[in-house]
Image: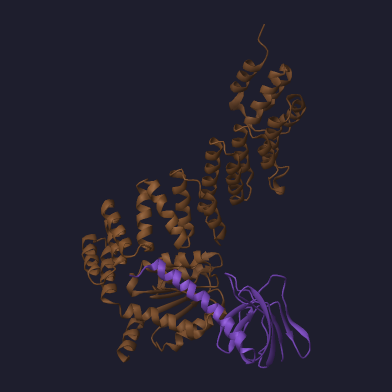
Length: 135
Length: 438
């Protein structure tokens, strides 16, 4: 199965990825219809991988997919199209957890994306340490 | 390295790790990270619901808790507090994870006995590194941390003299022992020796002028001592350098009111708007503080600032009609006719037509409209079953003053059917404002 995912990305204080549509590129079929404002949860971001969940039980995916969307980086929405391979999909309750290995993608953009997350963690760590006042 | 690993394994030997996370996908990620630590005898329990987690904490007394900050509206931090009942800080681990990176949420977690705060989405590698760093701190504390640990253990057992001795020893171990000063101050505070406690917090701030715990310790003692002016002096330092948690912001509003320092209320209001979660207590205190500030400016005849604070207070309480009534009453006292009309127009659309709104509408009409125009409105309102006791008093007075005694008497009859307790008062009004008896 080949999927086409659209990811408008929000890096505000709740800055996780926002997916507005999930589409199979081969059939041009929407795999998942999201309501306006509904978001999918991004679980993990790796150096060349992403794990996210979709709110429905789906059959096992093992295929090449195209990810399309935007990142919100330094105040701008940046569009991207990445190709990846679904390495695993698991069903939990009413959700499916999908792991994707990115294969053809803008590495600089992906690094920037990871840096945004890391910057936020750094900021959180600084606040955390300053309040703990371990000295 | 091997020693460290065995120390880690000993720390986790036959212990329970509770992972509390509403998303099964995140549970799977965390579980996977824990597996990579190679702790074969660690019992990992995955829980989705807060209530189930509470039961498991009582039942299994988990040494390690990894919890989401927001568990379907319940706070994961409350689980950390429960865990504290069973373990002192150095022998347990608590990690909070959240998709919310707002400063106040991080600050709130840091104020509790949380060891690390991890933002979602995370990379497995970063998660593992953070977990290992926390474990290493627990397994191999520095001599200073070890003394602090001893002191805190004694403090938990209410052996304050022993705690003070440990903190004194800790103070000799590093150059800038601000944390030891804080805990020493806390011990004095527990012994109700507040001057000594204050001195310790101040000493801590000599080593680190922005030591949060010492600043808060000092602030709280000053608030407890009702020394609001000095407490208020610390607020700019806190606000400039640290995100405020809902609890701290509540204290800030209280200190502002009691020290009669209302100039910065708009800034605190901005801080309030930044918070993701506002406790009912914070909403109540903030609205009262802003309202009090508004009244204070009214007394100073500074209508502009008064109205600004009233507007903010109303926003805090979502333009609650009862609160709006109080604001309008204050503006009436200040004879601010245009402002009364403006604020009356700020009522929520959903309130329009409700008895509370109609009572307020009558009050405003009575205040704004000429008396002649009001009499017919007043009569209708009196018989509408919506008039309050105060409304009846006003209406009876209006008809008495207009010399319409039979109508005033029939309104009294109507009024005492629902408000018998004001019977005498209404007849007194009739007597006082009606035409003299012949």
